[in-house]
Image (cartoon, rainbow, N blue to C red; front, side, top):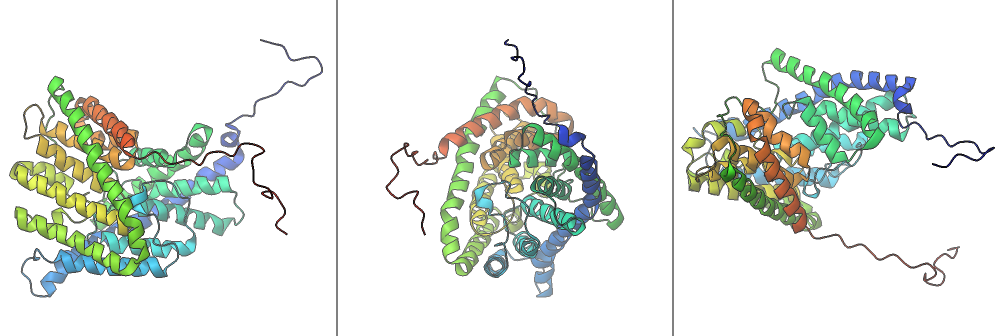
Length: 456
């Protein structure tokens, strides 16, 4: 190790955690704590409104029109109306309705105040009428936008780093209880945003504080209103078998199958997306009609309610697992097909998140495979969820946690299998995605003549 020459000042590495030790960081934590309350309350209200809209459009409206039961064809005109509404919102309100779900769950920064109404309305029209998407992406966008808007009401000249931290805290608060645990929402946002190093700690701690407060608000409002918390929960999970060689073999099979199915759904959605955008209004109506037709095919072909195909699947996971004995393999395969078609189409044209439909499709696949020798129900259920989530989200840690934290005492038993299935699905799905073309760098001195000339 060479010594520093005499007379030359020794270089001191900057302290990466200096912002965390500063007095301003305490102010940031205070802002996160204060904003966590109204933002989580707003998120709770949004989820309650979506739930009420689901009941209104799918149950109350048919009854008001004189139907004793919701007819199996009802989703077809219902989803066409959803397409009309979402198309109008995207065309005429700022922000194009927010995040495009076919492009994945990535961080796009906080939405501006003028974009928030369009994001909320597009998500409400999509989710509340039966489109196969989840609420997490709109909540992340709304939480970040509301947090930054609130912070700028107090101090208009906040810097970009503080703005990013406040926006992240708002997103944490908005999804704090949605996935069943504030920690799971934190992992989702951490992986999706690609945070790392000292910046991770700077953003994560205020976010965790906002998420913890937000989760308490969800619980309190759910108890006070009697509406529940709108959290992802499973009430009665069968015990899982101890993993053996056969179950590890099934982990490989499920990982491969999920990679191909998830890649097919994503690539199909990305193929359709620009075609939808060229003729937004009529094609979004057509895409909504296709979602309704997929639900009709499932209802007529299986004898089950069309709602099994509609919506995100968040609240259908628990009854699906509890009533899995009542499903034939044929009905489960038809459900996978119809839900996947509806999911692909919804990703291309509507607004919402990817998480819950991917969990549902994977769960149905795992339950279907559990009818074969060597695979128990709970292990198949968990591996299907994890493998399908990572194929769609490309977030391996979040996918493992999503598949296991729901299972209570069986979580540790199935976790090794879930990890294998997730890793296989993750690696294979990345191999199936075309490598982006990178333009070759221009060698020095080979620029065209005039390339750097003053345009004036």
